[in-house]
Amino acid sequence: MDGGGRLDQSLMRSGPAAAEDAGASADGPRLSRVESEPRRGRSAFAAALTAFCRLIGRWNARFLRLPPPRGVGIAGSVLLLAGALGYGAVEGEHVPDIINWAKDARDTAANSLGFRIAAISLSGQKEISREEILTTAGVTGRASLLFLDADSARVRLMANPWIADAAVLKLYPDRLQITITERQAFALWQKDGRVGVIASDGTVLEPFVEDRYLGLPLVVGKGAELQAKDFLAIIDQYPDIRSVLRASILVAERRWNLRLTNGIDVRLPETNVAQALDRLVGLDRDKKLLSRDITMVDLRLADRVTVRLSDTAAQARDEALTNKKKKKGGDA
Image (cartoon, rainbow, N blue to C red; front, side, top):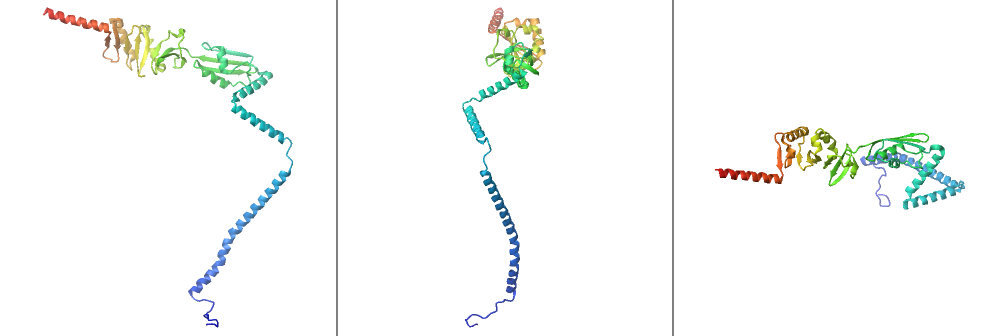
């Protein structure tokens, strides 16, 4: 022990513990050097970023000290006024009026340069008037040939159900040529109690019937407008049936019934319609079938024909059978 009462021992330790401490002390400085490298990299990046920000700050300060360019105030006022006018136009729903005004101004300028539409050649129209065609195509007294969109005019024309095809050709500097192909009224179509005029492709031409169309054949039922062309082509092969036909009725979009002018209904099969009509014509020729007091002829089965008598005919037939039975009983 030393004079102070402390153990007198060497400051240097020996053995495994000492070796571990020595190793720890030796490795310590090396770890600190490895960690110091990324720290120095981050410090360099931070310094560069700080310098760049200071440079930007100096440039901004110099830019703010510069006098504004000429016209900046006027341009700002114009932009502010334009924004206010645009907002007012949108809120007041005046945008279409503004667009029309701009188009008129544009056409006026083009017309002054010699592009006014001076001659219009129109061909192919019969059901549609000249005025309706020009209005639909967007050709007005102020329109210029230069800014007339021929493709858009054709699309608008073909939106009319009467027009099957259209061609719009601009012949500079001042001529316009419009050629249309019209659909023809083919039949009358009744659905849900409403009757309209249709073309052969099923397009509804008019939702009402004028007197000049009353002689067209009448087809009835959902889908009848699309199948009428093929079916009526078959009916036209039998003029005796066609002459007494009041209406052709499509049933469940699968088969047709005929309503004759004398009130008789003829039920046709889904297939072999021509064959069924041949049988009907033969029965009428040989037995005067369609002149008898009947209400229905069923031709849906290929091996038989079913006939329904009218109420009067059925009652007369029953009475005749009853009298016949009584006569036989009396004779016995």
